[in-house]
Amino acid sequence: MEINEKLKILSAAAKYDVACTSSGVKRNGKAGSMGSTSLCGICHSFSGDGRCISLLKILLTNYCSYDCQYCVNRCSNDVERAIFTPEEVAEMTMNFYKRNYIEGLFLSSAVFKNPDYTMELLYKTLDLLRNKYKFNGYIHVKAIPSADEALIRMTGFLADRMSVNIELPSSESLRLLAPDKNKEAIFKPMKVLRNSIREYKNDLVVYKHTPKFAPAGQSTQMIVGATPDNDKKIINLAEGLYNKFKLKRVFYSAYVPVTNKNKLLPVANPPMLREHRLYQADWLLRYYGFKADEIIGDSENLDLSLDPKCRWAIRNIHLFPVEINKVDIEMLLRVPGIGVKSAYKIVSARRTAKINFDNLKKMNVVLKRAKYFITCDGKMMANYGMEQEALSMRLCEKNLMYEQLNL
Image 1 (cartoon, one colour):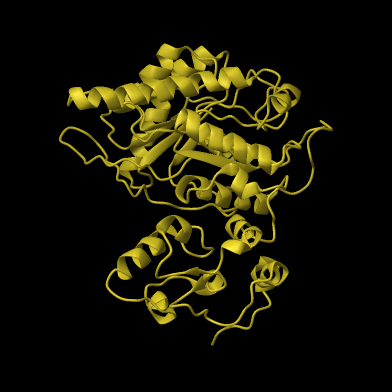
Image 2 (spheres, rainbow, N blue to C red; image 1 turned 90 degrees about the vertical axis):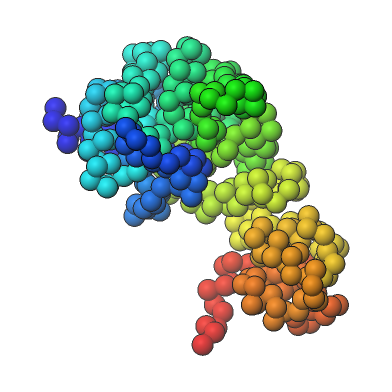
């Protein structure tokens, strides 16, 4: 099979894996090497359905030994198959890089033959890129569950970021839809990565030239909507993963129905809005100091008509409005519409003078939602009232499309 045909098959097969993002690594080019990477990430582009495809994003192979019912590449599915050799991936990456098509590689794979064999092929690919072709750009690679720990560690010294997909939120869901996988096998390489990253950071304090191990950390992905698992379970699991394994990101992928006669799988359109709400909740966990039980409250699922921060504020309306000139940074970050950058701008500006609503506008603080929850020098922007039902109606995103345009 020609390499162009392989590329067509294996790049299409990789589109369901969303766990790639900006690099989080800064490394300048150096003599004798090819490529570099920066903290702000690589050049982003987006596919028609909004998925990030900023890296050369491919599978090493879509030949799979497993029969996960939600996966288009499962062994029982009749799809066109292909496999790259490590040399082909390395050469293709360098050729794309030299033509300025890409600045990095996202490499994943189906489980070909067995986990160890697949992990060894991934390692050989990275070894060729780093040591033979002297590629110094960003590489994100998957760690295969149940693969030998030594292979995972060896690969980690060559990659910038590694990830292990947890895929489904519960052990019961895995048992029903992916009988070849289990939570213990998935958590094991996560522990290996966490411990190796921790060892690298500790050794770096003593030894300046300690070899880097996955300096951009590890991430994972969960499929949303393939099983009855509710948002409460997903958010609690994400919080646990951040705390236990020190993940950089948890990615959420709305389940895309594939040709399958399994009655346990839904046939509806992908729940894209639910995926969006989970990402918003995830940001509250990572950057705004929220706990999982605060975000979800007594509900089973997130409110699709309101973003999680607005819903929390309305549930806790007794805490509002807050005085913008006095409120502490922790509470300021909980005001709907005020992000991390805006919060620190406000804290910095109010040290020298009192802030009013005009000042907030000049600082580019978005008042569309914040105006309902703050006062400036004791005054609200208008007499909106603080009734929960009225606020919900004003903030409901379904109603935003009917607002008069500001000309």
